[in-house]
Length: 94
Image 1 (cartoon, rainbow, N blue to C red):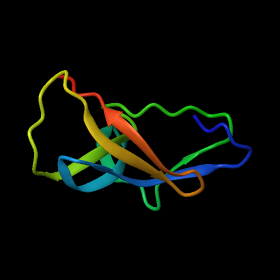
Image 2 (tube, one colour; image 1 turned 180 degrees about the vertical axis):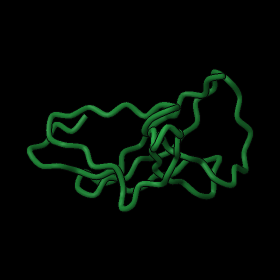
Image 3 (spheres, one colour; image 1 turned 90 degrees about the vertical axis):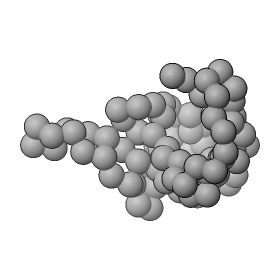
C-alpha cells in the first residue's frame, strides 16, 4: 500500500534463496496469457494497494539456491524508488 502522496515504484528486491529477483506481470494479450518483466518496475499510485500473487503482478525468484518448504517463510526485501528498502518475509504456499 502506498501511503504517500506521490506514486512510488517497486524496482527490485531480494530473497535469501535466490540470486536474482524480477518484478513481473501476467495479463491476457490477444487471447493468450503472457508474462513479462516490468521495467523499470511496478508503479503504485498514492493510496493504491497492489497484491503480489500468481496470475497477476508477482515477483520471480531466479536461480534458486536454497531449500523452500511449504509453510516456512523466506526472508527478503522489496526495494522501492522512493520508500527505499523494506524487509519482508515471503509466504511459501503449495
